[in-house]
Length: 143
Image 1 (cartoon, rainbow, N blue to C red):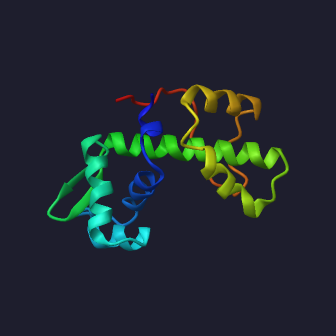
Image 2 (spheres, rainbow, N blue to C red):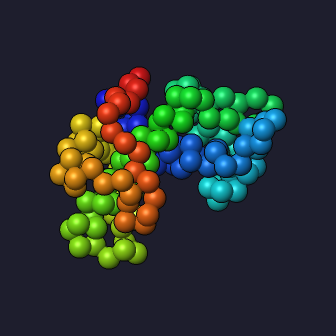
Image 3 (cartoon, one colour):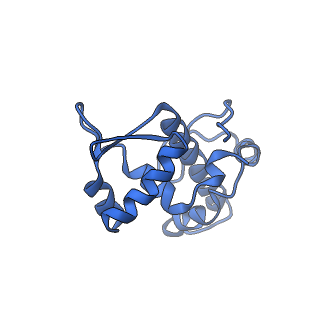
């Protein structure tokens, strides 16, 4: 089973909450991650602890940073999600429903399935919302 498939939705959401809030000197504060997830800090910490065990984040003095493995996992998630959005768009789903529909399946899809869907869609470079779809060709980490 691929690492991405072993994460829960909330763990992926916590992983997504880390970048963009990091500063050049430190990582993202726990309270900023908790606020972005609309949960209390102890709950956010529980998600981050699992991510740290998987080697996806480093935590130091209440600040969290993505590791290179975490960035790879996040990129792979974005690929899964955006390819799923593209598939649902092709099936005629309204634009406002694409993200929600993709979130229902993106973590369940393995790398091989995403590659097949991407090939069937003609290797699109952007999702229906205009966000770039990370290119295929690399195998995600397992653990």
